[in-house]
Image 1 (spheres, one colour):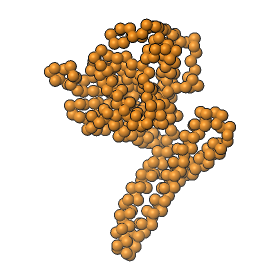
Image 2 (cartoon, helix red, strand yellow):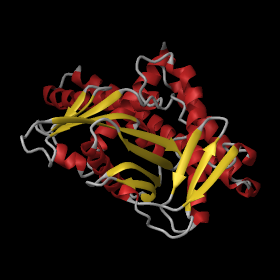
Image 3 (cartoon, one colour):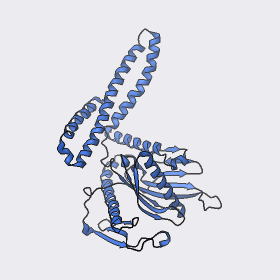
Image 4 (cartoon, helix red, strand yellow):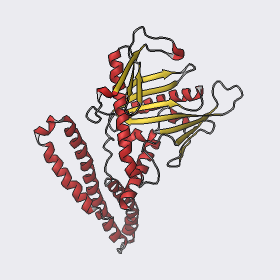
Length: 357
């Protein structure tokens, strides 16, 4: 692929964006200014990669000429440089090819993560708690903040359901591939015979929506308030602070009882509802593109087993990219970057293949 025309387009568009950012009026619309800022940063990186590629190609040609020269010592040194430069040129070309893939508009958004116990009863609820801890540890390592939105605690520990927000740079871009069914195989603490149990947990990763993204007619909402309760149904509040919101057109139901204030619970519930509606909207748009792809990575399909955590064998396997890591204890402590970045790269490669097809 001849990348030079694309590099020229990147540079031309970067110059256009730079002019737009130089207009003070742009900053009257904060959202537009942020979008332009992110686009400029992306284009600047691509242009710099193009410059590095040009330099590496020039050095490669020079060293190839030395290999074919008469000086044996120089030819030997140049041959080593050729090998190194060929790898560098290949890497830079691949990075620039990835730049041809249009960025996901939601990648820069903050994220709401919902984890729910599936098959496996108490053991599934315990694993919901384990995943919640894993993701919050990863978020801290990334410099993101996290906020518990809603948690339904289980009697023996963990959660039947937990919903939390992640805020920071590139959250959705990295977290979106966690959506799906996660399977755990291990011996529960309550298992006297040492028999391995298999349980499942579902994870949904939603880009956080703003009011301008999704229009919600108040007349289409049914809002109920009630007293919040803890595990086993016991009351944990003496006022009607818990909130349940039903979106009648879609049937989506969101509850929140984490705060003592009814107003705060309603605000959190609306935040989750908007994000679920935006997720539906994005899923419909992605479905058009998904037909061109071999797998459904990142499309939000929740009904497929995407990953297995096998504790007796100390391994975690992602079935979409056939990657297995034998470092499960560290993985559960939030050291999941290798898996996350492998999924991101796999997605880019598939999208690039679709563009080239």
